[in-house]
Amino acid sequence: MPDPTFKIDSTTVMSKSGTTVSLDSGVSLSNSAGAGLYFIKKGSVSSASSISITDCFSSSYDIYKLFLTSGTWISTTGYLKGQFIKSDGTTESGSIYNSRAMTITGGADEISDFNNNTTFLQLCYDADTILDVIGGEITIINPFNSHKTVAFGHARDNFDQFGGSVNSTTSYTGFIISTSTSTMSCTVSVFGIKN
Image 1 (cartoon, rainbow, N blue to C red):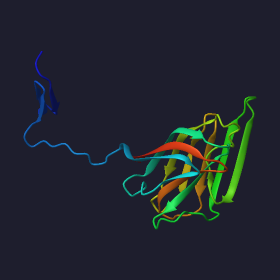
Image 2: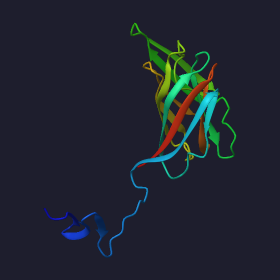
Image 3: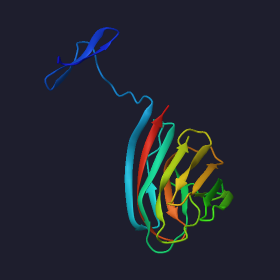
Image 4: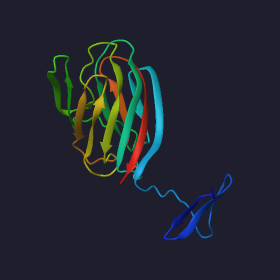
């Protein structure tokens, strides 16, 4: 079988000979941050009440995905809270967060908390046992752009979902995840999405 070639409009742009792949003359490859999902950074904590992910939001991306993995409650249980970090490094702690967190109980009943004009986003409903796993996915839209920031996702091992927003057009560069009453161990990975 002959070595493969890659052609665009009948013009060979890349060819393979043995274990060597070559670009033809006048052809270049680039990563121009087009549409796609891009890894930004990762952080971990052990027996801590919060994790701060600093300098992760910028003008490079429009949407961000935060994945919370390997999480466990260390002492007692509670719920997870989220707050944004401003470009000057201070925490957005004004009463400008609106969120709703809900869960489905074992009896298939919905239980929810609605928080209006509070100092944090509630990221999950109260955990009822120290055995509940901390994990989930948070989507954040427009944190760096001067638009209203929106966040939604799911967290914990139960069917917990949340959604919320910040009543501000402040530009944010980071995010804090903290516990309401306990300590936790977890890893947070941040990815950016470019439209």
